[in-house]
Length: 465
Image (tube, rainbow, N blue to C red; front, side):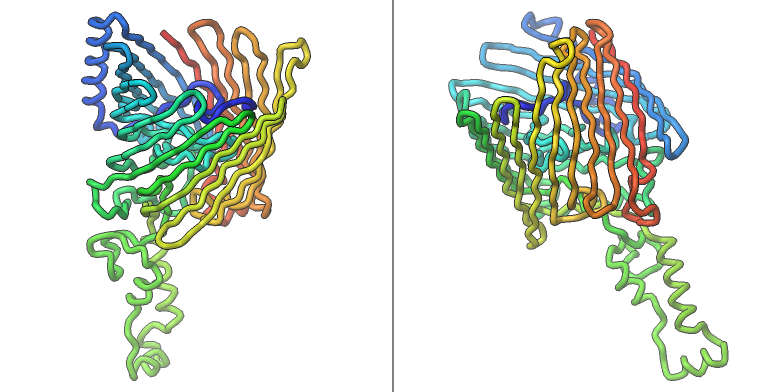
């Protein structure tokens, strides 16, 4: 939104909250009990409770889904300059088991002393300012099981130091541990060409589970210009999705794990020819080379699975925004290095806002952005060369009615993604939300086009306490 600053979260209301596995249910129960205990003993505690009913319709798949969710947030200030923050979430989904889980989304301690702010615990930190894609937003893992837009984030354990004043800040991060990206499972919107083998996920970290990632970000406001420069060194949050031969399929290299060197494994599985092979084939006593190749291809196809692979990467990011009255020029760019290979990505565009429309209260914004990414993967290929055209509409009424919509167009003709998000408060305690996402165009026979049947209409009704 025009006028937003880099030091504040991007516009769009309260952010959706991520989840952890079901096994964290006991931890959630203990956390909720601890939160309620704090509320009863601390006069300076602030407790918010949210209940949500959700229904989803996947129009291209002619099926639906429903879910119930609850969110709890506690802000407690034990002493001046200190804060304890706890945010818990739980959802029960009628169809998609991967979405039924409980999670401690945030649980951290904050202390302020002069120009220094220290935070320790699990947090969500949002970077970036463009609308179509948030390139530099790299500290937290995305939960695509919750929504394909990647806006839902998982909490990341971190130690954060922030030095700064009102217009400039330097943030330093130590990020122990790593969380895998949540991908839609059976019953979800994506239809994968092969089974998704999450149990085979590979994380290439030098120090294994004890590794730590590091990041830094310097930001400043210089009149109408906002700038931020960030650095990240750690496990990349976006996995490469590789086709592999499943473990135990009988192909070489699949005895203990899935083998992602598919061509080499299939070639090694072919019988070795000898001097008698041509004669035996001519007599019809053994299969021909074409028959052997067809049989191996059929066996390989039947045993292919998709394996997420995470590599360590270094990335340098830049955010820039220049505001000239109703016009906001925005840019996000990065240079990343993975497995010794360097790639580039950028989002650049503008948002122009008209204020006081119709009855003098409504605002309308036009958004135009261009995307380019030289690193393509199964889940990120749609961002390699796109243009986003969209609009933001706000009624500025008591009900806080607003809508954001647009279309992401692949300039190579590979398809379009249409989206609409709208919300309106029914009164002080109730809120109604709508999300629509439609995928058009693209080659339906392209195995990488996993979103071709992911059209979705989602309605939510939230109750705040």
